[in-house]
Amino acid sequence: MKIVVGGQIDKEEIAKIVSQLMNGKAEIEIRGDLDGAMGVKEGKYDYYVGACNTGGGGALAMALALLGSKSCSTISMPGQIKSEAFIREEVEKGKKAFGFTAQHKDEVLPVLLKAICEKEGV
Image (tube, rainbow, N blue to C red):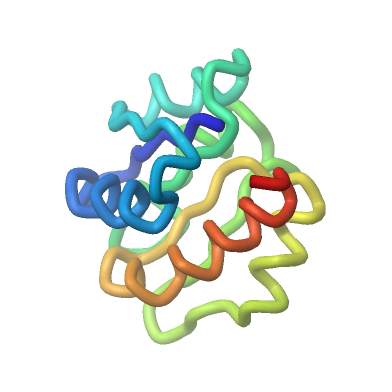
């Protein structure tokens, strides 16, 4: 499995957290938003994660433009972290790109990555 980290904030830190949580179950790359979203569209990456201040703007703008809203989900925004059930449901629906606020990365990434691993059987 390949996960690309995009977004506007904390890419290095997010990639480090993803790598630790995935514990060798995925290849992690950091790319610009356009390259990351295009890579998902072309099948180079399985999932895209990104952070910004709103959870949907800079985190997902390119993914939304290239992949469409049916493939993208905002899993946190200022003052609101989506529930574990919501995040799991979005993964099960086949969403491939996930945006969140940088300050919520420690809360949402474990839930998101666990749901992805369960869906992918890794």
